[in-house]
Image (tube, rainbow, N blue to C red; front, side):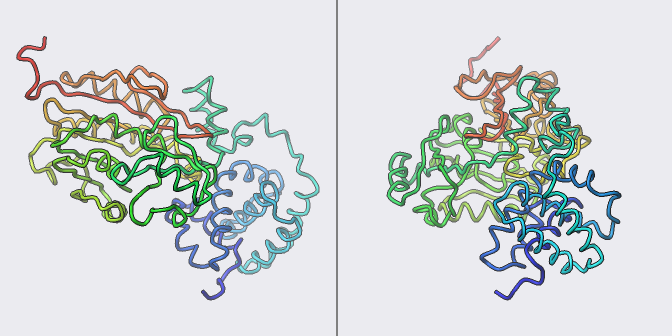
Length: 443
């Protein structure tokens, strides 16, 4: 590959600027990775993820050090300083290298008039890292937006600091062993033979957690479908569905397809699996996963809630509804959520969630089961949605979950993010009375 047009830190600054302007890291980072040498890709990713993870703390430090904010047209230099401060505060990079290369990156960004400011500010930051005590400011101390800290404090008064700390931790790499190809114990032995340390997950039957992340091409049998990467909390959905041969199953909001593949692995004799997602480009990921695992599902690009546009009139025996949500339970994996999500987003999301639940209920067969899932820790998107739905839907029965994981909520169970294992997730299970085995009078 040819040399990048910009130094590494300049590319990272542009990615952070794109995130601030509304792009996710998954949108902004891939094209940026093509602008650097192959050997710099992991460093660029670390700078971008670290810059987002600690943005609110570093941005606060910059606000104290800058006499006045940079002009809008120079905003990229603000993000360049965030990248540099991240390295000074959180990496092992040599201080002189950070200073010199950040000044060069400033020139490369066509901002030579700001090199003096960049150099002076970073030298002061090196001499004095004892700005106002940030412990008195939870948003800065935990590096989260004010609204998110306040909401977590309100919803989880005994757990909010642990959630915030967990959000700043590195998420472990967790695998799901393909039950069609082998068992967890055999695959664990394959990992050990390759020198990859791992242990069984506590709650997911087919899960293994690696002691340290590795590239997927180092995982034995990954290419031929022996194993997939999936968080432990997400793996729990398949058991909740109570799958059986001959069932017709819908995975609504399916992309990227981890759960679609998991349920096909767990029950190979399903009559049909339909995986639907609004974004056709995201369905391409589902198709890639199905092909690698040699599995088959019918993929539909549509709004799951608009059933008139895609549903064939045949009810489903099982529906997995993993709704669009705030993603507040997976911030450690997607730290850009801290910059992208707004408190005003939650109420519209809750409206979408309730609407999807009502639409999916209409196409669930009598005697069928629906599993409602989110990767959120906000009750507004979780048990309160289920409670609202149960008030308006007489034929919905909430299933009491007798499981060893999560916390019992007024409806369903909540998993809070665990730094040592799973993400934050919520599940509720609803059964629809009736079906061929129902008693004639179930009053």
